[in-house]
Length: 377
Image (tube, rainbow, N blue to C red):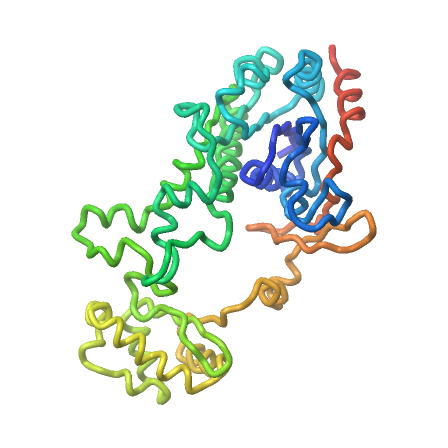
């Protein structure tokens, strides 16, 4: 696919993450910001000047920044000139749907300038609730995610990553890719609305059906680090930390209790997963009694020798240093020459391991507008 031109009125995380995936594909992504700038520019330690702080950099490397005031006629004229002059393929936004028309960014208006445009918007609830804002944490709360996360005897807890934002971003990227394929066949553009709430609800695939299948209440709420269905799957204490063990079948359980270090767990009532679920409290305690006699490395060596799925519980820094992961990390370089590590591509490989640093607010405004106007018919 030829490199595409993406124009994105973006802020926060969900959409910048989506368009960062487009940057990874080699597409030209021009982000539009208001004169006030994206609030995320000021979050974290400044690493590229006062408007490029740590939280902003990762999702915005490799992009251009244009500053436009779309509340003015001049700002909207510049926007439309860019869409037409640069033959924009995809327009994205993540402002409230109730603002689309008055900002001149609604799909009908932009298609008068650029027929065949793929228009994609992320919002909290979609056009059906055009003036209702939403953020990742509140949506995790509303959609049941927090009630599913955290210790069984503790408070509801946010996921460790902003997964609603990231899910919505991945959904927009996927839908844009599908629309591009369809446009290649039909020549027609598309209008795509991604609701963060609906995207989050779509991930309730292992829990929502349990409401109607007679599942006990304990399988529909917090379970700490254990799996609700496959027992034992949990984090277990060791001499020097924790090890995660995931038993996914009766065969794997048999392989565990065949090990001399765990043979005391070989009880008839635990031979099948149903019995292990019924006795999960006692079983978890018994497994923990075995693992805490050895170091994490010693436990993992036993598990791996039995062909079981297991892992040390690592920090992000330790994960980044894993021998298989470290070579896949991408990098960017700050204006002062410091190297910042970035996550790898989710799939495939990319020779462009070093990416241009995130842009200053409005860094490319004059150049992009001049380029676009020079190409107008």
